[in-house]
Length: 541
Image (cartoon, rainbow, N blue to C red):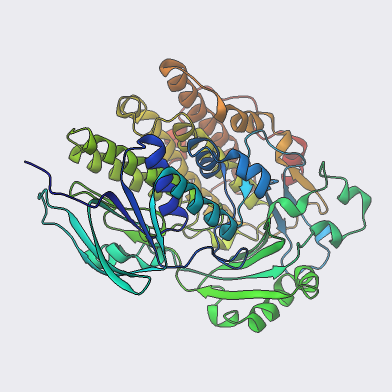
């Protein structure tokens, strides 16, 4: 069947982080592609007080730096992140006497703190330089989707510079964020049962945790003493508070909480949020008094799912237009990277005249599987967040799971390698089952914990867990098929060993505790030497 004439091969609704990175990726892959982007906000946008989602982790950072070729901008114009850092400081002003979890030095694989305004201005310029038809200040008024199975183009009506216009496109991708233009039209919204709220604001100037203490031992724990460059989590039961520095000179702040444990009505204005912070994190509240407020926003039930994201009828959703998890481990840019990679592959197959409908179904199944497995890290886990015995172990487990499978697949460019994914099916299933059982065990452990405080004023230093450090470093390795499959199998074996040690650790205190299926999953196979023996875990025990 002959294709109908179009104004664009791909029309992207939304020119924020997801839409602009998709445009760049598409044009880097195929410079002849006609890509149009409609963005509601006029450009350039404001720096700092623009959007949240500023912290990147390994997949998103690799996507920006290497897949999109933006490493120079990240190094020169953004802030190199000093890892995640967690302070178990609920209700305490003496943060330097609390348990701290983080790294004393940078891990090998980089990530960055992203000033979204600065970055999106740069992305828009880059997309235009590559040939994208980027129209800022464009308001979408109508979306007319072609009939299913038709070769006719999709049509989108919009207003730009006061003039009504229309574009016909073979592919339409919704990257409009929470507006979800196509998602709403097609009725794809879906609840995921994760009831959490968030409030956030930005202040002028950087907030430096090192200013909270004069203790030379505490100040000397990090080399260099750059705690301010971390994504700092101030943790308590049912909530966490973030501090993220921005390269424009501002600091991003936010409270994320379980809706049942901390009602949004207690923090939905800056005055209420400040009063709440004085109660829960008094040292942070005192530090913020010297900083000028730039903006304040809140969001109820920020997490949600979606019934479909990729279609054989030449449409797709990416970023927050599709689904959103939870910001605790900053997975937003990861899932943009994954969705965009699948969308680029589908469009390339269509452009080459290949059958792509089966791939759309498979990629969606994989994408939802990644989403559902990642959701287990957050759902019903917020009551644990103030537990300084359970949470450090959970963080190590969660990151081991992330670096064992999903991150290696992305770094190796194998998300669309269906032969390799088929080969790894057993390892993927084992890892998923281990993680599901472990999350249940962690919840049970936290519920039974007597709350006895472990030794105070300690740094649980992830940098000195040798195998943890090596898993991070190994993400950049380039391996042939057999070596890659062996690496993933070894990572899953590491998960088994770690699960066995955590289960034994928990049962020392709670002998009758249900293993939630871990005993059967672990079996009687060989176990590694103790996996959590660095000095910090001796303290945690």
